[in-house]
Length: 262
Image (cartoon, rainbow, N blue to C red; front, side, top):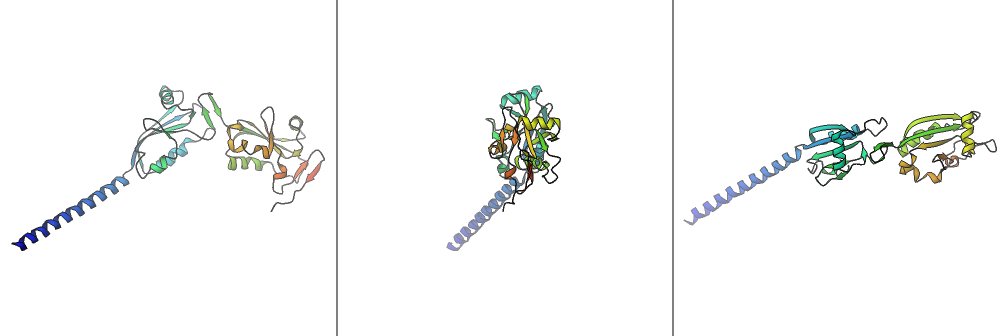
């Protein structure tokens, strides 16, 4: 009798272990399947009525599309539309282009990606607004971040560096969006006006005008390389800081050939 009871216990225990193993495997498979399932989201994009120089929101949308997501709805409204006005009011938007994301952003496979993009509204909608120019400021009703660069050179100085390098540096290192460029010989009428107006002593140089103050990266370092004039123009005066580039001191008419910094 004892043998039969022991055998029954062994059989029941085996069945329970098997069932527990199967349940564990089934639960693990379900979790893995759920993790692999794309997060279902909805996208709403708000764009300015007209702003060719504004940040390209398509780059952000492409980045989102590359994640493990399934986009069930993708809508776009211009900022002056009734739909956009309601969304701007509801989510207290200050800038466009902006993107609103709704849905399964808390799924493990995409959570870390989405939580870096913007702020969460009370209803769980992710609100993504541009942090850097160029954008359309809703309160000011204008485009912010467009900059004009004017370069001044001395055509008689064949050894002097090409001031065009500044434009490349401003775009690459400081993120400036330069929407208008002008290059002037300091000996020409307009060039002379700038030289006199801003008491320029060295050439080449460059001037920045427009929404320069929208770029913190420039305003924080500008006092080390130039001046901000009363009319708001940023005047570069940092030729001495350039690594070995040749320039001209127009007050003495001397060509300056700095030693290359190690």
